[in-house]
Image 1 (cartoon, protein in one colour):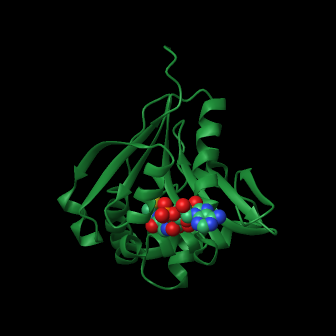
Image 2 (cartoon, rainbow, N blue to C red):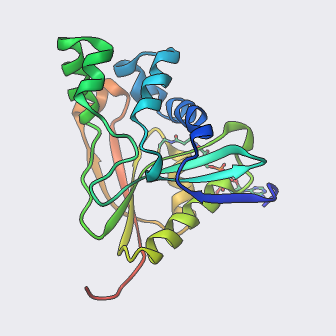
Length: 200
Ligand SMILES: CC(C)(COP(=O)(O)OP(=O)(O)OC[C@H]1O[C@@H](n2cnc3c(N)ncnc32)[C@H](O)[C@@H]1OP(=O)(O)O)[C@@H](O)C(=O)NCCC(=O)NCCS
């Protein structure tokens, strides 16, 4: 770990919201742009959708080094609301774009935790931030009595796949969703890390 001291924090501080929205947009640009556009308004829209409690963040020298967005207990990191789409795009287009965005939603079983997104500041990559964040999720899941942590990695994110495999996530399945082709994804690969083998 070159970045010392790196702090892992549960939740996203208000001061880091804008940066998180930008990192999210950059990481998912190819999927997000066809729905939200390519400009700063797309980042502003993402910012309004972020649920700050559903994140683990890595902080270096008071700046956001990276984050993991979490889905569990009926709450998502990105909370999509029809009203926000209608406000932004109008009655008809808002409904269409809301439905498009909802295509990416995945369910998670009670007792499991799902990583919705991971992104590290491009200038700080290759120094262990992503590894720390993923290990922090496993620690968090263990303390909160979750049984497993899942992540659905798009085939466009080979760096995420490699990192998850290195920290102990195992291959579960490949979901081939042809309806996501217009959003530059062919399939999602589900990886899982078992946290607890205890019977319920
Ligand atoms: C994938 C991602 C999260 C990795 O973050 P990161 O902070 O660079 O991850 P790490 O530094 O822990 O690991 C990356 C590499 O650096 C290496 N590394 C880690 N610490 C290191 C150190 N101190 N010195 C040298 N190398 C190091 C790791 O071994 C790893 O190498 P590998 O790729 O050969 O396995 C980051 O590249 C990213 O944000 N990508 C875009 C995310 C994205 O597309 N998200 C959307 C889909 S969910």
